[in-house]
Length: 264
Image 1 (cartoon, rainbow, N blue to C red):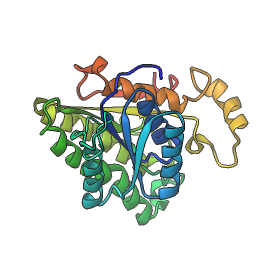
Image 2: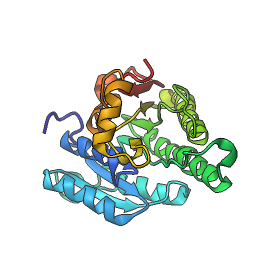
Image 3: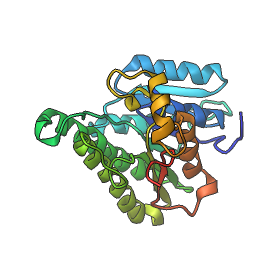
Image 4: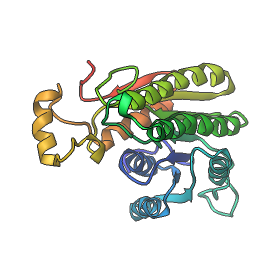
């Protein structure tokens, strides 16, 4: 365990079955948090929980669809009802941190050829899913004496950059960035601090071009990214944990870019 910044706190991570979401969940657990992980499929969530428990942490998996308000409310309630680590069966009673990471990419084609299904799915999950999660999380956090912190995962594709074949995805992630700022202003006086992280290319399958291997990607990014490589999921997680921690108590409504210098 590298530090104890989140000992005694509960963190909720959506889309935590793989990639960035899993890395974020593992990072919170490594710093003492009890973590509730959620997503649509049970098996990858159970794998995330197993990894956390193998490392000595505590986690709970709850399946949910972020586009369903009643399901995300169940996840928030599960986080609040987690037993206190001191024992005795008493619930912790708070949701201290939430990370809204769940998202999908359905691009690769020019906008005129994008299906309405792909358009709606990206808006439903990437935007409405964050909106519904924010509502449930804020409504809980503003009842708590110490409030809470929320971090939304946006993307450099949006307000920071555009790329052919990503118009709908970029529109959805730009909405996340603006939604973050608006919610931050609305609720900072409620004790709820809200920020975003915008990753660029990360070491997940999403950053691989069609037919490209990880080795091919490494060769490509040596010359295309200022840093010479993609970011790691651990580096994105570190940015999230900073924004969620007491080290960032005056950081409100920011959109922290983690992109190997791509938009510098």
